[in-house]
Length: 351
Image (cartoon, rainbow, N blue to C red; front, side, top):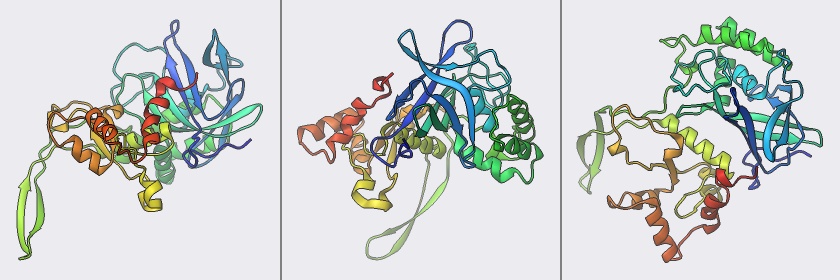
């Protein structure tokens, strides 16, 4: 049975593989939405190239809990799903044991734990499921790595970086080989110097918000006279990449993007020109953010322009208050979308 691609239907098919503490090295659990994956063997589809690499991992139940289990856990010639995903994206080799240290960037070999990977469920039959990685989050880090964007960068750089070309040849063979780790390490060493060079290929910078003063000249035409008023103002820098990843994660979780207050889905209302249109609201006002402070993806809420303005109308206003006012006046644009915030929250996803 072929399942719908990510986001094409309301019944979104998405999967999360997440590290959890257990014993000394931890283990991986999973949460699936929109598909039955139990007891199925896992194949990983590489974004962009669409090459499929098999694994010996299965989705199983252990002590009543959903867990990722390898058929031959002592066979080190092939990779489990999380290190395989890290390798095909040209990331340094992860470790299994969490030592509680921040995943400082740049990442280096055995310096971080893969905390969570979000996947699109591409297809499934009675025995196997094909999953495509979308976002990867290092443990003790605020950010997600956009796997597709990262592999697209690798594909673009293969002509100028031999190590990247070697990695793409290795993964393009569609064979699960632990040697991919060493090839990926060479690629990281050559392509990610972490100082200058290929900035677009670096491990993405911390998703932080810094108080950088920006002098910006705005041309503001006033009244019917058509006079030009020049205004200089100061603003705090916003991380556009953080907003982009927050939108992608929201769409992965709910299958579409809509306002968390009134429920409007601009794609439903305006067709193609409304696709992914939404504003990101900082739950902690950016004006109150200290210089150098980090903002996590989950610190952003998805709001339409109207609700966003209302939330900022007065200092004591909030998302919850605007939701309450809309409910009192029975003015939800799409109440069923707002209900999804509770129904499809991560904690409620079926284990």
